[in-house]
Image (tube, rainbow, N blue to C red; front, side):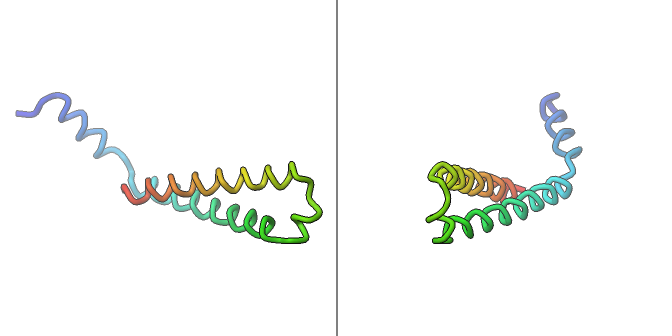
Length: 81
């Protein structure tokens, strides 16, 4: 005999479309990769660093850090699926 919570858990897990989630996360990872590459390109460009205001450089560094963290979380979620 099943406990009601066991049935509910099974129902929830059986109704989730993991392939759709995997595709969404993969697309998100691709988008983050592009953003990371763009930010790395700017932050590794000596001409950009020499001419850009410090606030812009700091903003790009923060955006890069955030994108790297998001990519890490997306990769963790993909590994769980």
